[in-house]
Length: 123
Image (cartoon, rainbow, N blue to C red; front, top):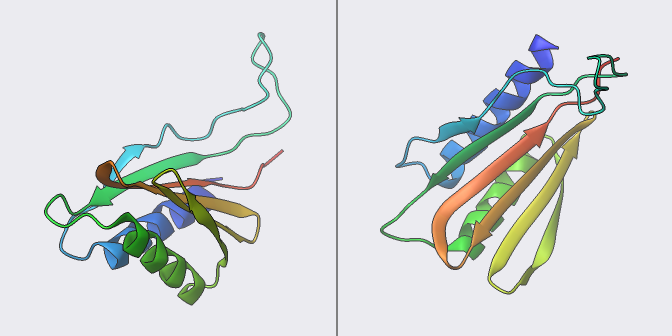
């Protein structure tokens, strides 16, 4: 589980650095392995890691360009990428690789870009 978590974290940080090279990306959510189907007594079938990284350029926000740069960086790193059409100022990318999932979100109303990833379930 720790290998997948470290891989995902490093991928998110690396892509964020490509998208906004003059800013330092920040990990805003990384609670470690969690059990998304946990029962009240603590048992459950599998664990997963979810990590969120944020970055952006407050002086020059361009969500369309950021999402396009993220798509290109993910493809260059071996991810399968789908760019969704913009919707009400929301720009996004979904990517997969070897059971890992990544979503990139940027908004016309906010200078931040959010990279969220999830490891494959481990039983």
